Length: 394
Ligand code: FDA
Image (cartoon, rainbow, N blue to C red):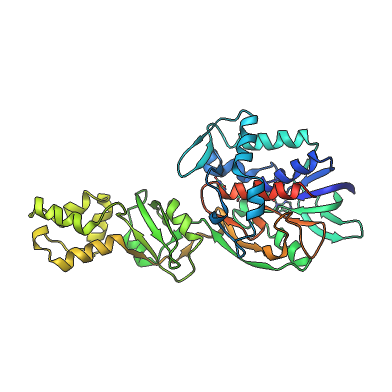
């Protein structure tokens, strides 16, 4: 049995950040992870370039049953603190869109930064060590893995959520929380593509690869403006991933496919200029031609020249495109989701330290807690901020 001051379960973004900070405070720290490599999600993130933070990160970018919970950690370790660390290590990065920062070269650069810092802080990383069991003792906690066992004063659970089981996602974090009497809120996949009802699958057959700048709105009136993407399985793209976190089974989403101008006015203008032009031709200049063809094949739009459309038809056509209704069949689930909604109830944790109120010395950081960021680097920022906050006290 190895004795350490701090044991961290999970060598992901949150766990490594916490370990580094605890190590610099002179604590003896071990990190255990069942994977062969540390930071596996970091490596595949952002298309291999890791969208490591967002310049605009603030509490309103997070879903949490207690929206105030995230304020303390996010304000004490901000996006600029992480950017400083990236710059200190000489890693080049760039701004892509909407405040999202990506590595110029590779997501491996972020893992290398964290591992270098772990090395400087004297953190021991034990890979291929799957945690099976946790017991409380008078001195702290005993953690049983498939390798060695650990005894620690502070136990930090940074075991992530349920997304991407092939990358080692397990429910161990939730199980430990429940073992110590903490409430765990129901979980579901978020930042995830939608699957479509059978009739919509047929309707959009052949549109795979088409992307349209849109405003997508959920029934709770949350909206995002980014691209939507038709795929062979359903609908994806950043605007769809964003809204998936706000969508509930059985609900519809409304998609404004022409967000930049009033379509009714535009069509009236086109009628003035070219009265004989077919509506289909006019629409094919405003939206991807293949999409318009599919909508005509489904007989959803009048097949007439512009000068034969009446006032109400202009209104209806504009409303159809500004307020396109889709009722998803479901989502692709944890297999392809970027994050898990729900998790360890933040009412059970100190927002300053991430320590459990019921079980002193037990901490929950990163995605295992009920904190879910928008798409765009916000989830890593939560991992850095919550990991840093716990790292100051464990
Ligand atoms: P994380 O899941 O990273 O780490 C948990 C660790 O615990 C894992 O290494 C796992 O092996 C280990 N573990 C689990 N059970 C265990 C057990 N029983 N024993 C031992 N170890 C165990 N976010 C963002 O901000 N920008 C982005 O670009 C992206 N891109 C992105 C792409 C894809 C494909 C996904 C799936 C996700 C993203 N994300 C993202 C989300 C981001 O990756 C996620 O929010 C963080 O990785 C969460 O970090 P954690 O450290 O909390 O958990």
